[in-house]
Length: 140
Image (cartoon, rainbow, N blue to C red; front, side):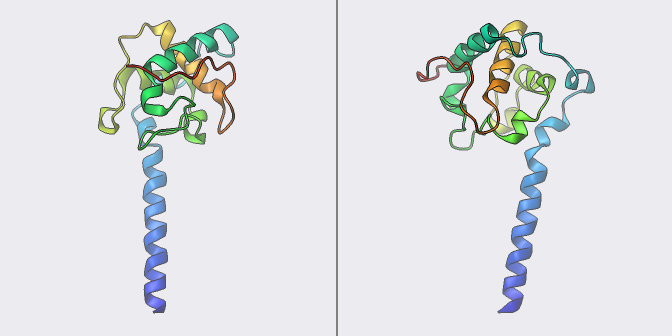
């Protein structure tokens, strides 16, 4: 019985370690040139509001109206996302992560992608949306 408990605990620890390692995998592919990019719209209330509208139209259908995640789609309020650099998020929007179901949004003009990043960053980890616009259903 004790061996089963030990094996169970070891299995849980291995699963937790694998999940923790996988949590940051999407950052592994971001080129260094993007990691340090500065968002020209960071902390600008008009840009955050515009980013909220873009989020509602392009992102809410997968990540939820409040960005807290939906099904297997991750919360954009998570520490993992909120601690990513603006450049890393911009790169992800530009390139997507098709293996995880994230489409590329390269067709959205660059300034609009930066506005989405400004909006996402304005949410904070687990907090209410700052500058959030309406919460109508997202469209794609």
